[in-house]
Amino acid sequence: MESRQFERLKAAIVQADAEQCVELEALVRQVAARRHGEIALVRKTKAVDETRRCPHCGHTDVVKHGFDKAGRFRFRCRKGADEGCGKTFNALTGTPFARMRMPEKWADYARLMERFTSINKIAESGIGISHHTAWRWRHRMLAVQAMLQSDQVSGVVEADEVFFRTSYKGSRGWKQGKPPENRPARYRGGKAVAAGLSGEQVPVLTAVDSAGGVIEAVLRDRSGIVPALEGRIARGSVVCSDGLKQYVKAAVSQGSEHRRIEPPRKDWLAKAVGGKPRRPGRLGLGRVNGHHERLKTLINRHFRGVSTKYLPNYLGWARASRRPGFGALLILEQALAA
Ligand SMILES: [Zn+2]
Picture 1: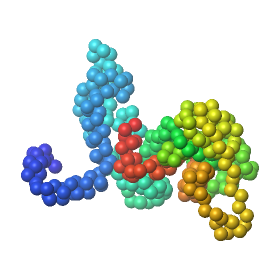
Picture 2 (picture 1 turned 180 degrees about the vertical axis):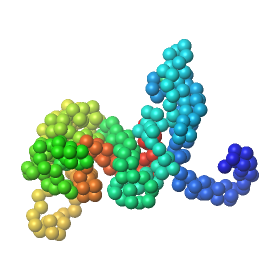
Picture 3 (picture 1 turned 90 degrees about the vertical axis):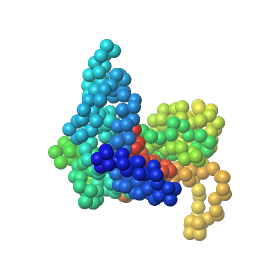
Picture 4 (picture 1 turned 90 degrees about the horizontal axis):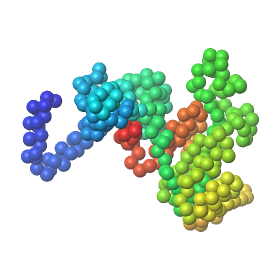
């Protein structure tokens, strides 16, 4: 819309009555929903315009500097008396979206992410991006989610590990005759060669509390448990676990209590009829177990295994999906705010 036309429209809107305001509000929301990507980009540009901080060197002597090839506002860090770097940048420089094209497709893409759509299905969805782009965008949007987790858990805390097979899914080495691991490639998520705990499994530590706080870490082995929880359990909490000594140590060293939870012993009859109902308020590992079940369903069954290298991104995605307000807009805005 031309700017003169837009000014006239704004003047007309000022005169709208209450009922028309409600109608307008709904209309704007409807139009905006289809353009979340561009809107998020405009908001980000405005924020950069206000702060005027150079993402390269941090200087604030920044001026507008025309437009780049994609038609985005460009800024320049001035090489004045206080030594700016002289580089140019746009609103996306320094975010995971730097040099990402086609903002008009970001919202549709994020909506597919909201539903955990697979890369193949995204490429076939008619959104108009390639398989490769779909994969790249996924990890650009998830990079920030991998970092977003609680600083601390408190109150009743349940902690446990879940294991995923080490995976080099997508590694080019498989096809180029340089396998990343000394074993044949697994197709469609075959089983680990050695059963149980081995170097073929990577442990993921999870600590959850009753307020929805989650701490998660991909570990090399169980010796990583204590360092991963260092400074992250609020003093005076009650940490529940299966009794592994690392959890006891992590809890006690941070001024919390530790409770060992016995696995439920159910005979065949109790299993068949469901057993006695759980007493409310009783300590258990139900919350962390439920969390791990959801992770396994998502990663092993839905995505048929993910590369260990990208496992933190998928864990972040799963955490995000459990937060209130999760949706396409939030995925976009959090990625842009990075
Ligand atoms: Zn600079």
